Length: 209
Image (cartoon, rainbow, N blue to C red; front, side, top):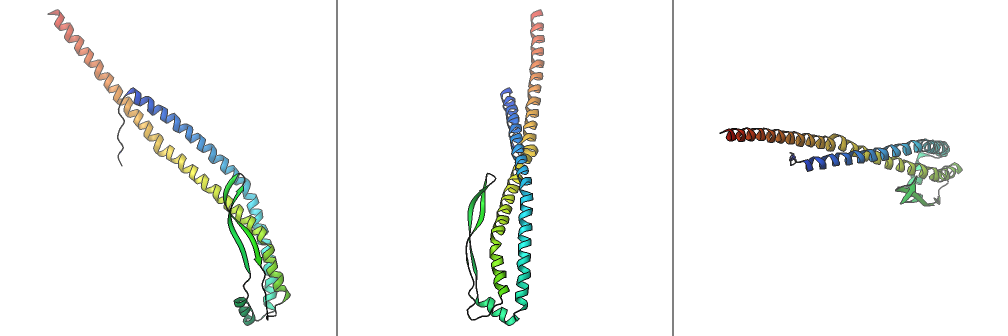
């Protein structure tokens, strides 16, 4: 796409210089916002790593209990049990605010405990299921921290795109237009100077006659 060259005038040159100063100021503001957001991300990373570790540790314990429960049941019994018993967890996406940032998070509302009915289930199966339920708090904390992390990361990327646009598109175009206008103004001044010299010489020649 070809852009039209500005009309060469001193007013245009002044306007272009003001625009350059404005966009450099905007760039500095965006860079400050980007750097502040990066700093926020750095403070969240240790909390997120700790939350992931807690989830991993708790689910590992529950997994070991579940393996014991499964070892006490036949595959046929386990298959029938999984087809019939449907424990459920109620969760909802909500708007949360953490670190002064609003984002979409998850909140667990309630749990429907399984009813085994005619099935005889080993006690370890109950322990494993309730172990999973008890992990929902640490799991939701990890999910929400990850959502916050990626929300902030998205902002950093957006800020960087703005900085890149100013650096690589807007400022070069403004500087190029300023150079164009200055060149045209210099050419006009030289032409005006030559014109005056010629006119003065013609007037001097006419006066001598």
